[in-house]
Length: 250
Image: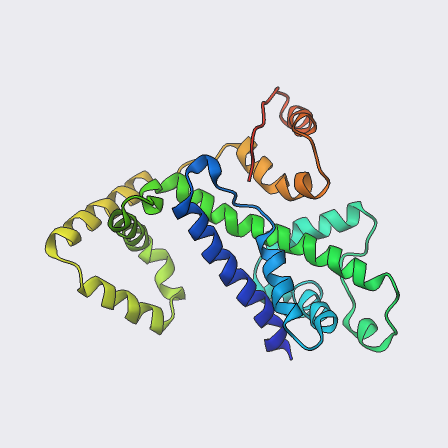
């Protein structure tokens, strides 16, 4: 039961990552939309394909917001932001599993569940798209839609540069696939990729401004409650003490 509930999220997130990559490769920077409600739409599609969408929706939500396994499933920052939003609205943060299994559901339950799932999914999408946006900032060649070979080489260089920190978390299958890819490289490709990897290590991660970070992690709120650009600017001025001009975010 728990495995099936987690599978809805896993499939939806994997599809989101594919959609983000496709968006970045096929669109110019000014036409990319990295926070665009893709995850909640993916999740709804998966739930509607089941025989009991509302029940599995409750289980999927409880699994990552209230179950004993929520901390093991990751996405701690999205959960913190989700709970903060619920508390601001006067909504109890967690669903209690025994209650929704034994008590007859209220008429408002489906609407509340839809809101909770929408909120939770938007914060997870913010984190997933944040990772993609940071990769775009640090290694733009990895997203070069006009040069597939350069894109693959840049992605491999970034992976090699981070092997000391990520190798322990790789599965045996992933390691085998990676070694298979490396064996196909020519000597010139090896030389170029290793030089790029060394450059990645030398430069490290590019710094992110506090404003960029704040706007990115508030974008789900701006979108859900239809904030205008003027309201975002006023909030940024209140937060940072400066006047900011905010354009297209997400």
